[in-house]
Image 1 (cartoon, rainbow, N blue to C red):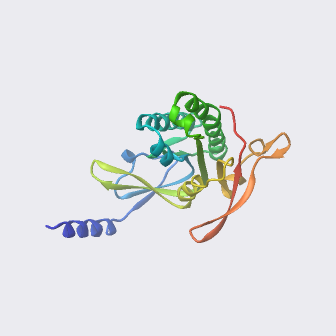
Image 2: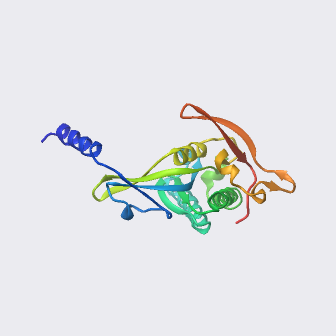
Image 3: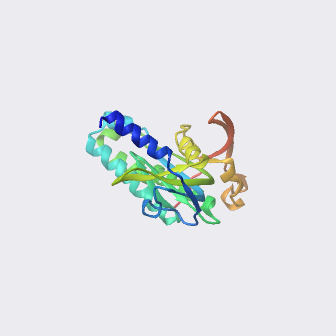
Length: 234
């Protein structure tokens, strides 16, 4: 059998698979989802991305870049877990956290602002002191975080021993897009749907709304989002 035949058969097999949907109340894992299942979940997705990593790779020794990326992901995953989120994806210097429950938007947003603080007040200053290549090239570490909430479905994809969950729905896709927005010092972006669920304590600081409305185009449609430059101390 040629590779063309193998790949053609693989596509036919996937297309002919009947997916059985079940409701989920916890964030699924690859072990809890079969190849013929889809888990429907109401969840909030947080994507955190270290901005400018291509520049780090270009001007810094690889060891420096590796240490900075590891430190960023270390702190980010700790905070996601501390706020009740589950880690479900790493992609280079990007991590995805999934939150469920009644407070999922509040927790995800608080987590995002604490990640912002960590980059601004801990990781960035320490990197400047520690590494000549950061200091001498005038590099300021920044990050972007995107959040959206809604109904999604987790489906298992890949082949045996090389598979993972993929997430079907607007929320994970829009959260990823929002994490790519670069408008420093606005580093945290949340969708309108997530914003609606926030209590006033997550919106108002010293009598002022810390969120600024902005409109984005996503998948050919206009969406409102809210951005903030207000950090939160962990």
